[in-house]
Length: 135
Image: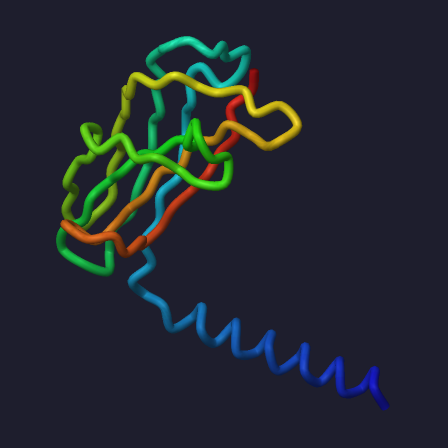
């Protein structure tokens, strides 16, 4: 009996998911297509080049933003606001070249980069992607 209830619940969730995906015509996205360097980092100040592709279809204007693991708290990110750029509806590519000082967290966690597509002048994330950089 419990297995049948579980199967029914899973089936309902699956159908709702499929229907929801079909109705979303305004899907925003951001993808990291290149990250250099992505490995053999050192704990010294350096430029990290991050190339992203984005699709903005839900609103007319948004901001691309980049952030890295906070050097004081492995569980949070710090944005590099000087790298923010405004984009308009459509798709495109952008190259970030922030100067950062990576921190090797060892067993405590990873040093990561996060790129975001956010509402212009706001903090609401429309899309994001996170990648790990390696020491």
